[in-house]
Length: 356
Image (cartoon, rainbow, N blue to C red; front, side, top):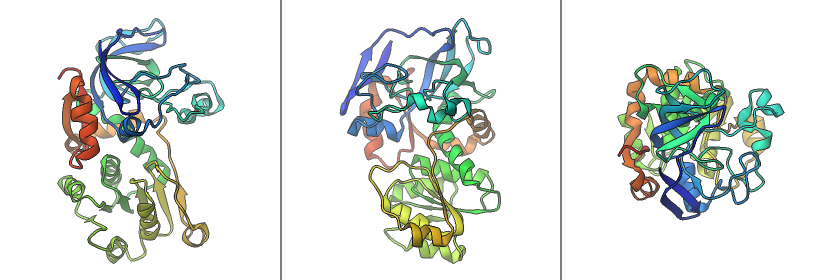
């Protein structure tokens, strides 16, 4: 079968590999769509998250088939699988977990103790086990979630990044009627704004330095969009929210946006970290956090979220559909997909389809 495999930094190749067969507790999935994530860009540009030595759970090292945001059709089932049959459309939850350590048994399988690699390799399909940028993939049956009746495979491929944001909203304790600020209008920032609106936020402020991304936010129906290069974001937000917003979501992962999040949130409010930070940041814990009663909450991936996320996407299809901005084939995954996403701010979610 055709696949997109990463061999290391700046080294992605389109290669033919054997079609994988499912083990007893696995299913084979004919991939329909696989999204390109910012972490895929970091893997390609910087070698981030890639296994340089055998992963403690999978035993895999490079090369690896990329892709962890994918949907498809079950084509084969393992001998121990009883709740799925061939032909079922699914979205894949791409976490790698042992299922038996203390965190897994507690339901926190996104923090599986046995999946933590000393070389920083990610506990995801597409990083430490073959992923979804291929014609077929094999996944644990427990992580293959049925799509709601009539939900397209395209929207099914949005389940994974939406689950990242859903987990952040859960941890932020956002309630209907509260106000929100989102720092960053990239794919995750826009998804954060969409989910906050669905959750009942009365005002959603979005800040980004890219006018193209702010234009996309406006296209999605958001009116409180702010450009820190042209205006004082803190002052502008505090005109309408004088004491600050209830929850500020940091979805850019840089020092400046973290600083802004701390300044726009109210005293005793919450700063919810959604992004990963590429560099260390500084923080005045006493003056800016403790004395303000602010809770800074972090999240990593998700757990037990996919069924709820798929229900949300299904109920609000019109709000998620505009987030898919381009579809390319496997042969174009690098040139028109990964490289385009790294330079074209107008792109939100580029999907790779083996059918193209």
